Length: 458
Image 1 (cartoon, helix red, strand yellow):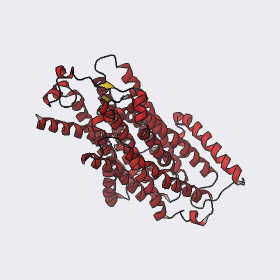
Image 2: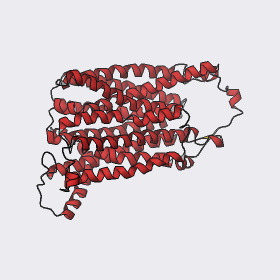
Image 3: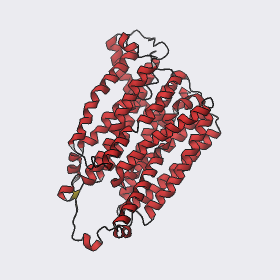
Image 4: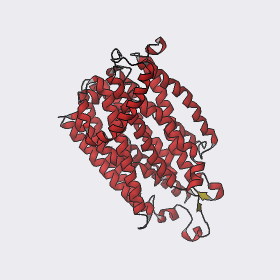
């Protein structure tokens, strides 16, 4: 019985991890081949960072819309049957729509007229269903570490695959993108089939399997009363992992990729940096997965709060990046067009984010699932839903600010190849203008995303 339980648990964990792996496919392909997208779509060089940042920011906006739609639907269905089952059925619909949009992505690449605009539309549409699919981690919080490991490992495997096809087809970027899109569509359809089995089959979700696996029967459970901690108690215990994500996202989503590396380095030189960045994106998840396997990361404890110390070097990188763009200080200007320096700064940024992202998600899940086990309680799962939605809000805000900043600096002449300002403002006036205009453009860009004004930059 114990052996059967262990086998089913491993199977369920593998399925959940694979499905979450497929969820991250498109964004991984986008990050690994952003240079190819810019070349194939014939985006003007000085607008590359604006296009990529706008695409990322509208995806954040629609990610949030999808997550909110999922949360509202879940709460509306609570009174009709098993809430967890209903959420599972809704997740099947989302994953089905996600797979369908990825097939559209394949078609868009095979009919490349107005490719930049059509890619923008399809990838934006995909983001809605991606946002609605992300909360499936709440259906299986016990597999959170494995799921986040798979989600971030997706970036590593996609990038390694990109390395291979770059070796043979670097001069044919459209063909490479078509190959990546076909792989993504096929794997997504397979993930949909496995998730349907996970939700509707007898392996992972039903009471029958729980009994066959040696778990307590309903009669035995009557003697076992497991209380649920209040939301305020849960959020108090999970505050640190809850806030770790914005501490990483404020650097990553504002700086990468519009500022680091594209603002400081020629587009073709950025491709190798993007590929290595995508690989390093999974380092943190791999480390946490190993920690859990050896029994170190069984639950959240204050030792993991030490990640906050890493914000110090990140502030240094952010300051030097801004100095390289806006000043003539030799120590900063030597960063411009220096591939080794820009690569080092970008990779340090990605390593930092690779830990804050999974540590935040897994930390919140650990608090909910095991944080109150000594009191014979479980945390309120609403914290996981709140965290998922807040993640999209953080990304949206920081990416929109990045759009505003990049648009302002390009308009004022702070861009490659020579960084020649075209204004005569004093430093104090310039600083105030940047702050004001960054926020103004970011706010206006919210509305312009809906109007799809991306053609203005093509």
